[in-house]
Image (cartoon, rainbow, N blue to C red; front, side, top):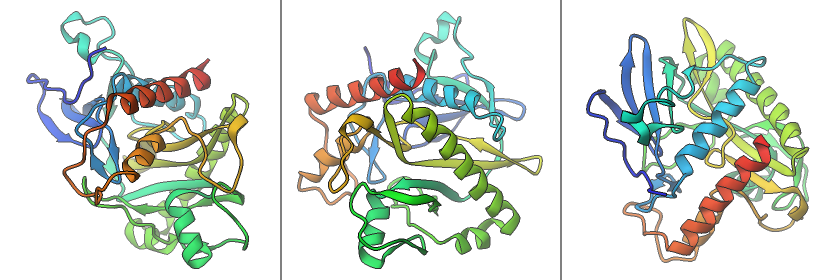
Length: 289
């Protein structure tokens, strides 16, 4: 399988290249999003793509967008605009046409388990995003209740920062902030229950939202191995880092290197690429079977 590091669609006007996605003007009020095989870690894009990753992210997001429409509307117009277009074969299964929305400047993170930056916050302060948690929790602990733990929406190469709910209110207003929080928790709890029945713990996840005609909608991606921590149920044991079906495997490899987590990032060895691709594919298989 040939990996796609960049899409270069000259017939469409490029809006931006993100961490994984290339976004183009498409039609009136719409955009074309192409999910490449780029992978980022610590908010830095790596030079080595993961073959098939873009298709997995696109198809898994589309799966969740369809599953969660009863909770909140989303931006999808056409989930596979090139499915029968031989001229754009490289874009098949990794492209969507979406409605343009006013993107909110917040990463809507939901946590059901303690890991990552949430764990670091807890170890330092006993709190996550200002939310007091019980003492005695460890790496991988299930939280007493689902928490909304937002962060800033940083530019590529800039680290996101965890923020309290009050900062979200300051950024988008109380009414929208409460809608984002409530929708995020409802989405997470629905997906977490669905995934658990299929052998996957969704430890945490990140959503992005936008406003369209004044109404909140879900945008970007949803519940993928890029935006979530997926842990196999049969390997779960609190007290240490968990095995996973997400890009934590890449983060763990990078942590073994003498790299300061600023650009340029080091290349990934073939073994790490192959294992990461397999983990992404397995997550999709388990969740959509």
